[in-house]
Length: 425
Figure 1 (cartoon, rainbow, N blue to C red):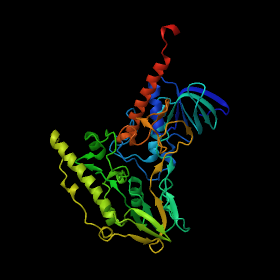
Figure 2 (cartoon, helix red, strand yellow):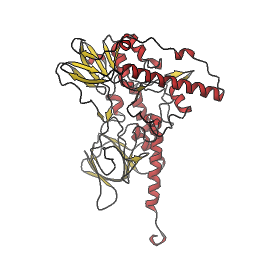
Figure 3 (cartoon, helix red, strand yellow):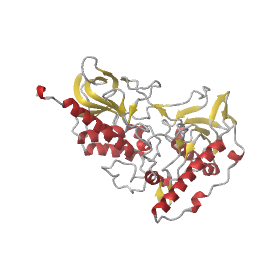
Figure 4 (spheres, helix red, strand yellow):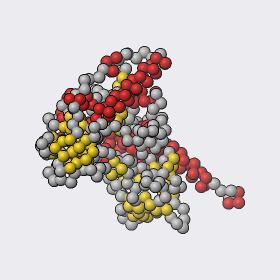
């Protein structure tokens, strides 16, 4: 569905982005009878299709990583859904309630009107007037490669957003920088394909994939972790290493990856004339991840005992593999050519890009200024961001609940705007 060129549309609420956040917002606004339109520059849930690697699956099981109103058709609730099927799910969900989504339309500029209420939105297909604007473009807008990246020729460098499969890389070894969920899964896939892989490991949490017959998403739910409203101090730069790959069989275990054949190194610090230097914090980072893992096991055991649950004991979950050579004798300096490394994959995250949103809704660092998605600029909202309201905001179901709060806020504001005192009747 496209906007005719030159057409001017007036709508109560404009949602920008038709990924999981935009679809969730549309559902809730539809239920509340709020007239709205969703614009998407590509296809619905496009990033799931074209900005993820081929073998990616959801990091949570199907019973958990979904919206309440629709299950994954024909899927085992305990399975981990492939990325294409996740994208298809959002298309089907939007069709389920006939979401007013127009694809192939790019939003170029949003500005508050100076002489009347609302906003004027400039798009690739014409102008739109809206009383409210919801930015639902999510956190994965601009891949971040740190400035330390070498400028030398002869090394293929891509961000994890560009990685698809091992065949796209030139022959030779690979350095994967970043050991969150993306970096770990990509490094594992490359090593299994026969590549020599070095994995640069920073601070991370690594929950058990499952423990005592319960997936970690269940444990974080019953332990109240998904509802945590703010990060714990000192964890702002801590990523999470978890995977649904290989049928969700197995917790991310860095010692296990090393014994499998991956060379672990510390945080990547600098490049100089073909040599990369790593911080001497590999053991510290792995041990910190172990503590996070064991702390969750302790909390789970205590919960089971406190509630008298009949769940099988799993003492072997506490067994740790021996430290591999790369931990007992860490590599602090590596000549890329001598190590046969021809590619670097930067699994170093993303930044947001709101250059099109010309309103007073950002703090001094350029980040959205909001309370649970309600911005400091009246009439502007954000949805789909990590920690928007709580830790669970990162997950599909968390986005759905965040969108409900914002939709309720919009409906309430509409009621106030529609109020007329007796003299106006």
